[in-house]
Image 1 (cartoon, one colour):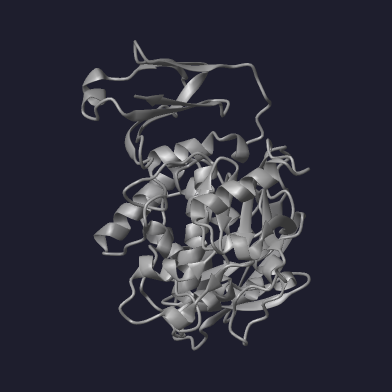
Image 2: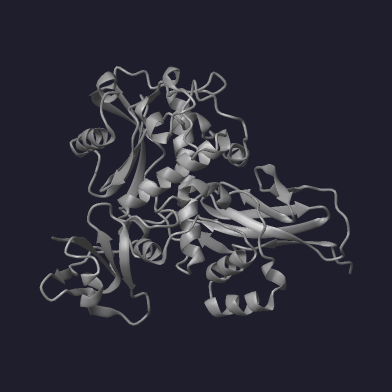
Length: 464
């Protein structure tokens, strides 16, 4: 029997795995067993209904596919090699969901600002927002998987839905971010939408970038000042955004990778450039999608961190979708041992350390306490509501829960920055914990104590 000169190795998912979201990020490497030359720079993905091609860069590839509910049979082909595998997709049954909304203010036609090369209708906006909401599901799932929490993520209530606001669009364009977030939030609460069990991911159609006021000396804060109805705020049950850069987002899954790779320079005299000073369409897509992830995570009760997604690392969300150098885990004995020990096939910590040694930087990660909050959050689990209680005694500084504690954070009261954290993610539950007095004294008297327990119950205590 002849052995193929190439071997297709999937590095982040195993055949037969079951996931609860529709678009997995599949990453892998091509191993050249015979050291033969191959001119192919594409890997072919075949399903029962579709054939598509993805780039192979330095023997690495990233594939995006939208699954159907149930069993999905997938075949990968590279040169003369084939790699069949199965992914099962079953949405999680839960009452706690996320609903994307395209918010059309009174008097506005629903068309978002865009170049004439882009379709900017309401229908196009719904497609772009729905698709990218699914991509955010995938990113969160990968971040938790990297930290051995399985591929937990939020569930979408539905595809993006139009929400007709009573707020006039001309008035909205005169409001600041906080005013817009408050006004839209109040409308949602007073609507027939079930705000107590749904987190809302809202996008204002009437955002208007006034490019005629742009000049080269403007910094980012100045750009925001010439953008009407701009907003990027998340918290409670609502994450709300403007649409001045929605033109940079893809409509279809086949466009995602090419959009991230698009190096077209943005004409700042006509369209908003929110790319963290990189200036390209691809960077604008990455920064704005990452910003949405950041703000959405605030609705899942995450605070700010100095690094990573809850810092400014969200700008680099493209790195989770594009090919870059990855470790060949299949040939590394140390990797194999760690993989067996972990029981998940996830080598997140080890791989990140090896990447640091090789000088490969990726800011797309969540700090340990953020990951733990998501891992036990009600919006990422199917917990039954219980009468378990989480408490904090401000006199004794004792935190307790009858369900068992999972994470405690000390946060800055002004900006939500995580100052300290204590994590209890072992199998043996801890039901009480006294905050160390010496740690509290470092931060004075103004701080927030954040607590989450094993059933997703959350307590926030402002210490003044």
